[in-house]
Image 1 (spheres, rainbow, N blue to C red):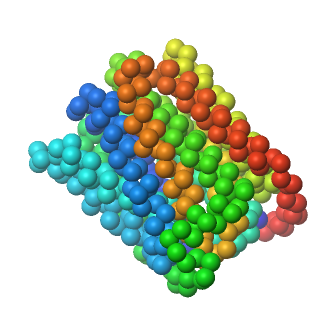
Image 2 (cartoon, helix red, strand yellow):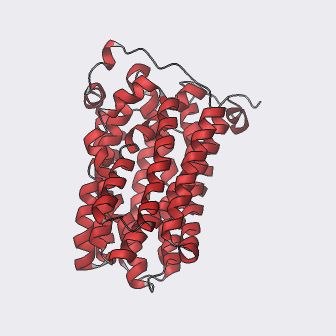
Image 3 (cartoon, rainbow, N blue to C red):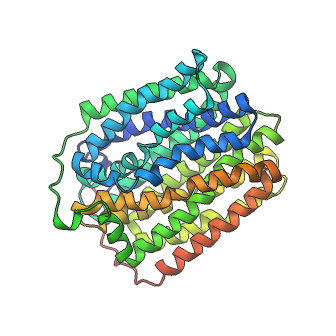
Length: 409
């Protein structure tokens, strides 16, 4: 299916627009929130505690949230997530300006925000088959569009945040994020079509239905384990970049923003490639090989590189991100029966993020004791081990036959 034909599917373009707005604010906060903690406390350990607490609800509520997504449906779950996160995000700068934002209260706010990570991400991918159908390659192609939209904001958001933090302060950037959630919620309400929630089938009953399905499927089981390992070290990588900018590049928020923007720039280019490449190759093999390629450059960050060198490494690594996510998330949604998809998706997401808080909590003391560069070497070794494990499982299977391409509309 051509890109233009796919974009004409009802609701897909408004979905992408809402995701661009919401994700832009989230990407700005991705830098603004840890920077706010670093500046106000001077403690990398406290910064990583805040980030870990935001991910903690995934471990506690991720699997049960699959029941919520199943009952509400993907659209209503995303609408609820954006509608509630807008006032929650606004509460952080409001409490700070009122002089009552203690560290404990900040942890409460980020914990509540984190409660929406698992159901929102799950719904974000589950809504695609509702809009474009169940063909594995078409869903993977639609996922490439979502990846492209999100990665574009990953390019613009951190660099914009780095400038805005210097001009207006991290506190006001958090207000902007709250506004983007509200705009995204309005877009969903007005322009993304409704679909009645699915009736629960026998296979989807029980909180652990998704976990049982994943554990029975060898490929999904390997994907879940790999996601856990790779994400743990990814969180350590993300926590190390602001510290590198803060300690080695004169405490510059703009440099930190450029580091995160490099991820986005590479991923934007990778997303354009994914839109063309994903429909032509076996999704599982493409995702497995790209995952190994993504991890290989990270070890170079352990060297004393200038800013341009760090940016180049992050750019090259992130090129392969969409070539991992688009086919493998497409696989995840189409490989499972529709009635149990929400629970499978939230189960895999929970596995993926389960080790995130542990990685962040470990990163804080390591960053204070070692500095950022040795932590990058640890991240590189851990991610490569996880990637090679999944590739060994994925490449043993027979590739799916590639169907003839759709005629050009």
